[in-house]
Image (cartoon, rainbow, N blue to C red):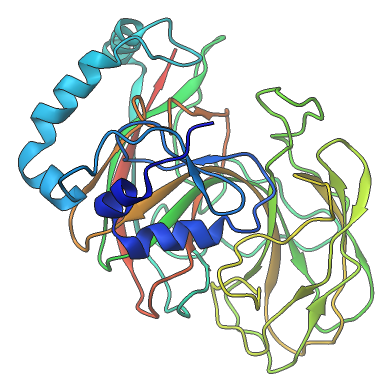
Amino acid sequence: MVFTHSQRLERWLGKEQVDTISQAMKDWYGPPIGIAGIPGNVWAVKGGDFQGRIQCGEFVHVLDFIASRWKRIWRNHTRRMRCQANTGFASLSDLIAEATAGKRQECFFFKTGATGVAGVTNSLWGVGSVPPAGANASNAPSGDAPTKATLGALYFENPSGTDTLHFVTGSTLASVAGNTLLLYDRIFQVNKTMNSTAPEEVTGVPTRYQSTTPGAPDFAGGNFLFVEVGGTALAATAHNWTECRYIDELGNPSILPSLTGVASAIVRRLDHAVAGQWFAPLADGDFGIKALTQMQCSAAVATGVINFVIGHPLCFMPHPVANLVFLLDGINTAFNLVRIFPNAALGFLEISKPSTTATTYTGSITLVSG
């Protein structure tokens, strides 16, 4: 186990950005999550630590790197690591051949987030304009299993035949410094009846990441649940999410620990009262949620929209500098050719916003199948 050189990481991203990701992972129960755009192999792990080798940050910050040394450093870095291709490609040469043979696609996005609360996570699913804003989830018991065709999801073409699709590179820009996006696959969503304290059954199930076999590409381990305020703010009523039930990553029934909500929670934020909490804690020993089976609220909240959402994390995308394109390398970093499943509903969370300011994100990601 190799722990990342903390001073190099802070020099590269800035202390505030590193602290945000570290706090976001403090109580995380799932597998490590790669951090895009850091040369080397850096992962955020549960407990808030970082593992893997960092090959930057000795002398320069990311701003200096992008401004003056990008082409030369990455040319040398790629030459050293040219044999490190992941599932789907035999080598870097194979990847290039597939990309130039018409199996490359660009996925563009332009999202203007909502006003937030400092230290709280916002969802970008319900905001526009590219892709268009997603609608509130369907009511219980069925809910929805979103796909790439669902309004709000980043659009891409599924791979053909036996090919698999992978993230290769990308670039993204944020109008406010210090924001961190989490790219995730939105695998299930269901609308909760707010003005009720009765248990509400959920029968709908996700269609991706449903294997109960550890190590399988679609293993349910690492799937996370969050409670999202939709397009209508909540009434000023204190409440907890209690007696919510789910199926864990191994297929066993379990009960979610009580989750404290927020009276008068504003639109697009997560209804999690604990600062920095972007996922609902699971029962002791569980490290993934395969399906949700019951929702219940401790109080009748007269107005508001709440979506229970299950997602699967793909990577953190830090933005240490405002209005500067941040380059994401998906080959030579921890975010190493991560697989994008057919019909994945790709969305973004703003993890622990550094300020209340609404932030605009512009960017693209490049996917290649092989």
